[in-house]
Image: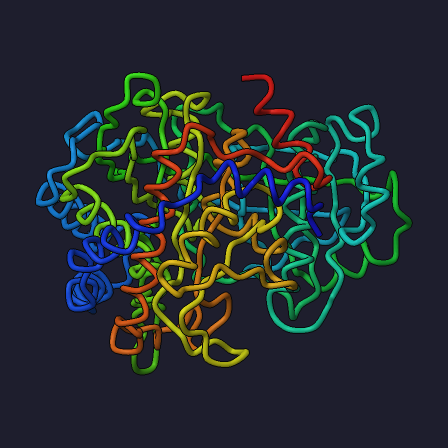
Length: 498
């Protein structure tokens, strides 16, 4: 719970809306931000013709061109390296299974029980092995380079039931361990799984930032029974068993990926060179291989609704006679479903200075009101509700429009790092993701189709979002991190160094 002092400061910083002026402004924005226009954009972006907008895919390219055309229609200034496009240098890194081998002492992984997760050409002949258990977070934290450098790190993945071995906690633990492995310099990392935990054979070809150093540590997934049993029986730490392995060099090809960016320039002499960024991701999950029936992940709510909202808000604000004091940057990004690739590309290669960017308002899942907890109408959630004073701004404008800015007590903080706002937060920029529903029927399923969205409610939410963005753009006080919340400490530290 924020202190009363912080809440008062946040409300003051948001800028008190002039009661006599704002209802006409809200009405003028509403007149330009219409439900049928939103429906038209969502229905195209989420149509079967775009085949689920996977990153990369022809459907994703069509979506990018469509969004650029709408920015052009709105009169936004193009600010990419190629008109409205910010080109990103990525590569597809396709593992080459030719000659793939993995042996632990005399146990040779049977064909079909080993896949390459991180493809790095490797030849090992009786290399030393070191065992660690994925669920032992204390042991993971205690690992040192002296212990594992040059050795094969065998990671026992606990069987939690069900294919994939998982849940969100296991997935996050695995990512954390792999990040540690990059620093510890083992010769190889091997995720050792039980037979029922094999990796998804339909997993997409990995994408790699072509401007970043190539990974040096290969990663395998192995679910051979003999190897699993040997590792399971061993104590954590150095093992007597030795590892031999061969991994061929991967097949690397350049990939065309683009963020779409347009700008509404600020007019104030003091504030025009500061920036409010409005984002949404325009990609989704593509097509399910070998599906029986409908296999297209249309991604209407997730996140054609957010992309359409960026288009609509940009158009509505661009048509107003009075222009914002700060510059507003509208960006739709690729690759959110693959770990926020497009947002991370933007913050690593910013079009406008990070230090001058005052906020990122990220839009996700704004169209469905049939939340798993019950109907959600005339309201929206903010992730990291107490992390910044951004929520106070939206609460204030919501009092004008009748649309509430809500803190979901369970999901507000836990979802903060699960969308593109997290990349902006890591760069020190006060950020949040706005959504009507966190979990809804058809989430990440082919049934997330455009007919199921509530476009009247979406328009009302977008009017409120537009007013909040405009208020931040016109306020002399930039959004701030809440330093009283310990969860913001690392973001504050980054911001204060800029």
